[in-house]
Length: 241
Image 1 (tube, rainbow, N blue to C red):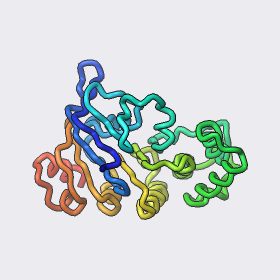
Image 2: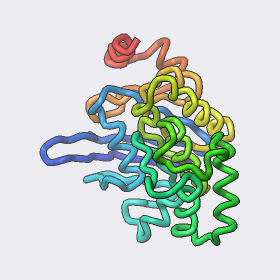
Image 3: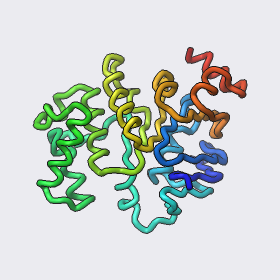
Image 4: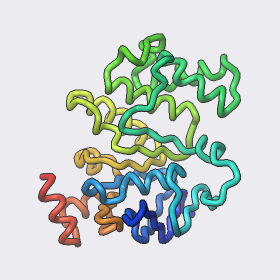
């Protein structure tokens, strides 16, 4: 059974239909990259999986559970990590506290256990040396790595990334992508909305091209990037070079 199963999802914002009957699945341990133009529905699909948006129609099952009728959204979200474009760190806390507090509040860990876990994952993303630093004093790339560590501290079974490098200066992009490559090699199930085609080509097990609210085409990186079936996929890849 796939870890994520989506059937006929529709999502409207007023008169604008952003998702128009999307069917989508992700298997355990798989890395799936969503690509496409701005406004194609990629981020909305991701936000539906995390219940930040509620679809108007359709079914979403994650871990075998019908999440659109879940009784405890917070318990579900604790199993699904999400990294945003803008980091969403607590600016009044230092790096370590950003990783400790959610574990204590959501997972009810004691402080000693939460600190141990936080330092483990900060070390994993190369940020342990900055544990005592204010998040206001570190770079964008470092903030995103802390945001990833904070998500990993919750030990999620699924990680969602919404354009995690789009707010970064070019020289900081590689440090975040390298962390994500390591997570992929560790076997973490990941859904990544990205405009980094090199990352998608290198790391994804499957690439999904969305266009105008539907999945236009999906396949292995080799197939989709070198020999796409759809004219719209070819046009998109030609434009982005």
